[in-house]
Length: 248
Image 1 (tube, rainbow, N blue to C red):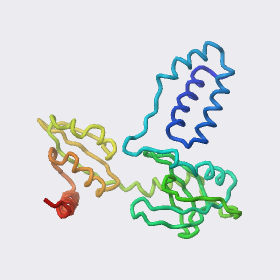
Image 2 (spheres, one colour):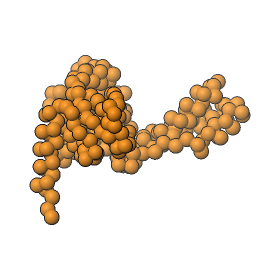
Image 3 (cartoon, helix red, strand yellow):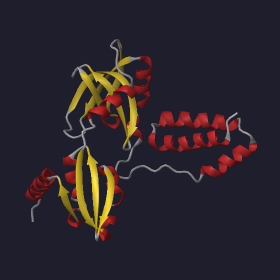
Image 4 (cartoon, helix red, strand yellow):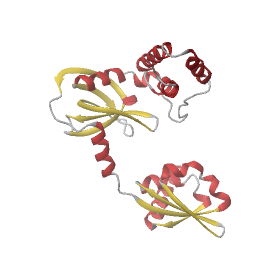
Protein backbone atom coordinates (compact mmCIF):
# COMPACT_ATOMS: atom_id res chain seq x y z
CA UNK A 1 0.00 0.00 0.00
CA UNK A 2 1.09 3.54 -0.68
CA UNK A 3 1.27 5.99 2.17
CA UNK A 4 -0.80 9.15 1.99
CA UNK A 5 2.32 11.25 1.33
CA UNK A 6 3.44 8.92 -1.48
CA UNK A 7 0.02 9.12 -3.12
CA UNK A 8 0.07 12.92 -2.83
CA UNK A 9 3.49 12.94 -4.49
CA UNK A 10 2.01 11.04 -7.47
CA UNK A 11 -0.80 13.57 -7.69
CA UNK A 12 1.67 16.46 -7.72
CA UNK A 13 3.74 14.74 -10.42
CA UNK A 14 0.57 14.22 -12.46
CA UNK A 15 -0.02 17.98 -12.50
CA UNK A 16 3.49 18.50 -13.82
CA UNK A 17 3.06 15.82 -16.49
CA UNK A 18 -0.21 17.37 -17.69
CA UNK A 19 1.55 20.65 -18.36
CA UNK A 20 5.15 19.80 -19.24
CA UNK A 21 5.02 16.40 -20.98
CA UNK A 22 3.80 15.23 -24.36
CA UNK A 23 0.17 14.00 -24.60
CA UNK A 24 1.19 10.32 -24.87
CA UNK A 25 3.28 10.40 -21.70
CA UNK A 26 0.77 12.60 -19.90
CA UNK A 27 -2.11 10.23 -20.66
CA UNK A 28 -0.06 7.21 -19.63
CA UNK A 29 0.86 8.85 -16.34
CA UNK A 30 -2.77 9.83 -15.72
CA UNK A 31 -3.83 6.22 -16.28
CA UNK A 32 -1.15 5.02 -13.85
CA UNK A 33 -2.29 7.48 -11.18
CA UNK A 34 -5.90 6.28 -11.56
CA UNK A 35 -4.73 2.71 -10.93
CA UNK A 36 -2.89 3.89 -7.84
CA UNK A 37 -6.00 5.67 -6.59
CA UNK A 38 -8.05 2.49 -7.10
CA UNK A 39 -6.06 0.60 -4.45
CA UNK A 40 -6.03 3.36 -1.86
CA UNK A 41 -8.09 3.28 1.28
CA UNK A 42 -11.24 5.34 1.16
CA UNK A 43 -9.87 7.96 3.56
CA UNK A 44 -6.76 8.42 1.40
CA UNK A 45 -8.85 8.71 -1.78
CA UNK A 46 -10.89 11.45 -0.12
CA UNK A 47 -7.66 13.16 0.91
CA UNK A 48 -6.39 13.15 -2.71
CA UNK A 49 -9.72 14.35 -4.06
CA UNK A 50 -9.58 17.28 -1.65
CA UNK A 51 -6.10 18.19 -2.92
CA UNK A 52 -6.78 17.71 -6.62
CA UNK A 53 -8.23 21.16 -7.27
CA UNK A 54 -5.67 22.92 -5.09
CA UNK A 55 -2.50 22.00 -7.00
CA UNK A 56 -1.55 23.61 -10.30
CA UNK A 57 1.57 23.72 -12.48
CA UNK A 58 1.67 26.79 -14.72
CA UNK A 59 3.75 27.19 -17.83
CA UNK A 60 6.19 30.03 -18.29
CA UNK A 61 4.06 32.53 -20.28
CA UNK A 62 7.16 33.63 -22.20
CA UNK A 63 8.11 30.04 -23.14
CA UNK A 64 4.80 28.25 -23.65
CA UNK A 65 4.85 24.59 -24.67
CA UNK A 66 2.38 23.25 -27.22
CA UNK A 67 1.49 19.58 -27.63
CA UNK A 68 3.05 19.71 -31.10
CA UNK A 69 6.40 20.72 -29.60
CA UNK A 70 6.87 17.35 -27.92
CA UNK A 71 5.42 15.00 -30.52
CA UNK A 72 8.78 13.22 -30.95
CA UNK A 73 9.32 12.60 -27.23
CA UNK A 74 7.89 9.02 -27.24
CA UNK A 75 10.15 8.05 -30.17
CA UNK A 76 13.15 9.60 -28.45
CA UNK A 77 12.45 7.63 -25.28
CA UNK A 78 12.11 4.42 -27.30
CA UNK A 79 15.40 5.14 -29.07
CA UNK A 80 17.14 5.67 -25.73
CA UNK A 81 15.69 2.46 -24.25
CA UNK A 82 16.47 0.34 -27.35
CA UNK A 83 19.85 2.03 -27.95
CA UNK A 84 18.95 2.88 -31.55
CA UNK A 85 20.50 5.64 -33.64
CA UNK A 86 18.00 8.33 -34.57
CA UNK A 87 18.01 10.47 -37.70
CA UNK A 88 16.69 13.96 -37.11
CA UNK A 89 16.27 17.25 -38.91
CA UNK A 90 16.84 20.17 -36.57
CA UNK A 91 16.42 23.94 -36.70
CA UNK A 92 19.09 25.80 -34.72
CA UNK A 93 17.60 28.04 -32.05
CA UNK A 94 19.50 31.22 -32.90
CA UNK A 95 20.70 30.92 -36.52
CA UNK A 96 17.48 29.18 -37.70
CA UNK A 97 19.61 27.03 -40.02
CA UNK A 98 18.36 23.49 -40.66
CA UNK A 99 20.49 20.35 -40.70
CA UNK A 100 19.95 16.59 -40.82
CA UNK A 101 22.15 14.32 -38.76
CA UNK A 102 22.31 10.92 -37.04
CA UNK A 103 22.39 10.95 -33.25
CA UNK A 104 23.38 8.28 -30.75
CA UNK A 105 21.10 9.23 -27.84
CA UNK A 106 22.28 9.52 -24.25
CA UNK A 107 19.21 10.95 -22.55
CA UNK A 108 16.75 13.79 -22.13
CA UNK A 109 16.40 16.44 -19.47
CA UNK A 110 14.08 19.31 -18.58
CA UNK A 111 15.41 22.79 -17.79
CA UNK A 112 14.12 26.35 -18.05
CA UNK A 113 10.69 25.25 -19.32
CA UNK A 114 12.18 23.19 -22.16
CA UNK A 115 12.98 19.52 -22.89
CA UNK A 116 16.43 18.73 -24.33
CA UNK A 117 17.92 15.69 -26.05
CA UNK A 118 21.60 14.90 -25.46
CA UNK A 119 23.38 12.67 -27.94
CA UNK A 120 26.57 11.91 -29.84
CA UNK A 121 26.33 13.56 -33.26
CA UNK A 122 27.90 11.42 -35.98
CA UNK A 123 28.12 14.47 -38.25
CA UNK A 124 30.11 16.57 -35.77
CA UNK A 125 31.85 13.63 -34.04
CA UNK A 126 31.01 15.22 -30.72
CA UNK A 127 28.24 15.48 -28.14
CA UNK A 128 25.45 17.94 -28.80
CA UNK A 129 22.20 19.00 -27.18
CA UNK A 130 18.97 19.61 -29.09
CA UNK A 131 15.86 21.42 -27.93
CA UNK A 132 13.13 18.90 -28.62
CA UNK A 133 10.59 21.51 -29.73
CA UNK A 134 13.04 22.53 -32.49
CA UNK A 135 13.21 19.04 -34.02
CA UNK A 136 11.44 19.12 -37.40
CA UNK A 137 11.48 15.39 -38.15
CA UNK A 138 12.82 12.29 -36.42
CA UNK A 139 12.84 8.55 -36.99
CA UNK A 140 14.77 5.59 -35.60
CA UNK A 141 17.04 3.71 -37.99
CA UNK A 142 18.22 0.10 -37.90
CA UNK A 143 21.71 1.05 -36.71
CA UNK A 144 22.34 0.29 -33.03
CA UNK A 145 24.54 2.35 -30.72
CA UNK A 146 27.93 0.61 -30.47
CA UNK A 147 30.09 3.32 -28.90
CA UNK A 148 30.43 3.53 -25.13
CA UNK A 149 29.01 6.84 -23.98
CA UNK A 150 28.87 8.48 -20.55
CA UNK A 151 25.56 8.28 -18.74
CA UNK A 152 23.33 11.35 -18.80
CA UNK A 153 24.31 12.10 -15.21
CA UNK A 154 28.03 11.86 -16.05
CA UNK A 155 27.61 14.04 -19.16
CA UNK A 156 25.75 16.76 -17.29
CA UNK A 157 28.37 16.65 -14.55
CA UNK A 158 31.17 17.12 -17.12
CA UNK A 159 29.28 20.00 -18.73
CA UNK A 160 28.76 21.60 -15.34
CA UNK A 161 32.50 21.47 -14.65
CA UNK A 162 33.29 22.97 -18.06
CA UNK A 163 30.92 25.86 -17.41
CA UNK A 164 32.17 26.53 -13.90
CA UNK A 165 34.13 29.61 -14.97
CA UNK A 166 32.23 32.37 -13.22
CA UNK A 167 32.72 36.14 -13.32
CA UNK A 168 32.37 38.23 -10.19
CA UNK A 169 30.16 41.24 -10.84
CA UNK A 170 29.39 43.91 -8.26
CA UNK A 171 26.75 46.60 -8.64
CA UNK A 172 25.34 49.30 -6.38
CA UNK A 173 21.64 50.10 -6.06
CA UNK A 174 19.72 52.54 -3.87
CA UNK A 175 17.70 50.80 -1.16
CA UNK A 176 14.44 52.14 -2.53
CA UNK A 177 15.23 50.71 -5.98
CA UNK A 178 16.28 47.15 -5.04
CA UNK A 179 12.73 45.93 -5.62
CA UNK A 180 13.11 46.78 -9.32
CA UNK A 181 15.54 43.87 -9.74
CA UNK A 182 13.27 41.50 -7.83
CA UNK A 183 13.64 37.75 -8.33
CA UNK A 184 15.46 38.38 -11.60
CA UNK A 185 18.69 38.59 -9.60
CA UNK A 186 18.53 34.86 -8.81
CA UNK A 187 18.72 34.08 -12.54
CA UNK A 188 21.80 36.26 -12.88
CA UNK A 189 23.97 34.50 -10.29
CA UNK A 190 23.16 36.57 -7.19
CA UNK A 191 25.24 35.46 -4.17
CA UNK A 192 25.39 38.32 -1.64
CA UNK A 193 24.07 41.72 -0.65
CA UNK A 194 25.35 44.17 1.93
CA UNK A 195 24.16 47.57 3.01
CA UNK A 196 26.20 50.76 2.96
CA UNK A 197 24.25 53.78 4.22
CA UNK A 198 21.50 54.32 1.59
CA UNK A 199 22.96 51.87 -0.89
CA UNK A 200 22.83 48.11 -1.35
CA UNK A 201 25.90 46.38 -2.80
CA UNK A 202 24.94 43.29 -4.79
CA UNK A 203 27.48 40.62 -5.76
CA UNK A 204 26.87 38.14 -8.58
CA UNK A 205 28.84 35.18 -9.87
CA UNK A 206 27.76 34.98 -13.50
CA UNK A 207 28.80 32.39 -16.12
CA UNK A 208 28.42 35.01 -18.87
CA UNK A 209 29.35 38.69 -18.75
CA UNK A 210 27.66 39.17 -22.09
CA UNK A 211 24.41 37.68 -20.80
CA UNK A 212 24.59 39.83 -17.69
CA UNK A 213 25.24 42.94 -19.79
CA UNK A 214 22.09 42.39 -21.83
CA UNK A 215 19.94 41.70 -18.77
CA UNK A 216 21.36 44.80 -17.07
CA UNK A 217 19.36 47.06 -19.37
CA UNK A 218 16.16 46.10 -17.52
CA UNK A 219 17.21 48.06 -14.43
CA UNK A 220 20.48 49.77 -15.42
CA UNK A 221 19.15 53.30 -14.95
CA UNK A 222 18.70 52.59 -11.24
CA UNK A 223 22.09 51.03 -10.54
CA UNK A 224 25.83 51.55 -10.89
CA UNK A 225 28.45 49.00 -11.88
CA UNK A 226 31.35 48.81 -9.45
CA UNK A 227 33.27 46.03 -11.18
CA UNK A 228 34.52 44.74 -13.54
CA UNK A 229 35.47 47.49 -15.97
CA UNK A 230 35.08 45.05 -18.89
CA UNK A 231 31.36 44.78 -18.10
CA UNK A 232 30.95 48.55 -18.42
CA UNK A 233 32.61 48.43 -21.83
CA UNK A 234 30.39 45.57 -22.91
CA UNK A 235 27.22 47.42 -21.85
CA UNK A 236 28.30 50.54 -23.74
CA UNK A 237 28.98 48.50 -26.89
CA UNK A 238 25.61 46.75 -26.60
CA UNK A 239 23.89 50.13 -26.15
CA UNK A 240 25.57 51.53 -29.24
CA UNK A 241 24.36 48.55 -31.29
CA UNK A 242 20.82 49.12 -30.03
CA UNK A 243 20.93 52.85 -30.85
CA UNK A 244 22.01 52.12 -34.42
CA UNK A 245 18.88 50.06 -34.94
CA UNK A 246 16.52 52.67 -33.51
CA UNK A 247 15.12 54.97 -36.15
CA UNK A 248 13.19 58.05 -35.02
